[in-house]
Image 1 (cartoon, helix red, strand yellow):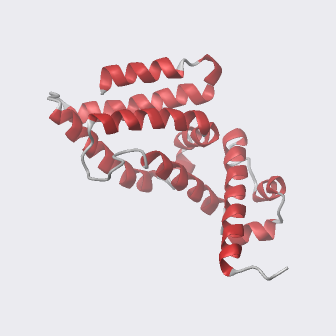
Image 2 (tube, helix red, strand yellow):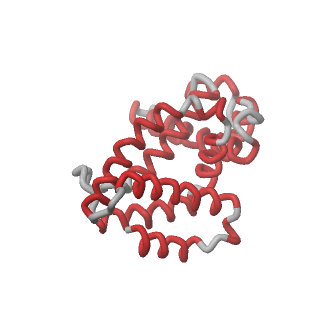
Image 3 (cartoon, helix red, strand yellow):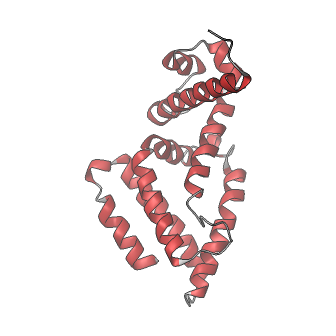
Length: 191
């Protein structure tokens, strides 16, 4: 057996890092950030606590990585051609993909909503989140302005709030939430 290449080591490292993040995301979402220790994450990820620190400097660092990866995945569907202009088709695509992502990544969204409701923890993300979301709100505002809205800023904020509310209700009660029907209504009424 030949020695591993640096590329192979990097691939192994990325797989392990993703495994740690998945375990931590699940535990943070189910038990809460404050109630989840690094030791518990390491145990559930089947690695030593010391090895976990080779990937993340702290529990907060791990949480930041999870949060940023989750938000970036969601945002990758917004303005897919990255030209700074949101078309109707792109908006519909974004809504479809956001709803699909909510269904596939329910633990991330549980975590996201629980973070928002913990001011001491959310303060770590608040500034970064504002930096990420501000350009999206501006693009949504331009979209609604081009549609002839009398108050495009309010419509953009309403859409963000609507998606947050739908997400919140769905992830905490998925079996009783008619997600597909709600998605179609959002597209029909707000796009």
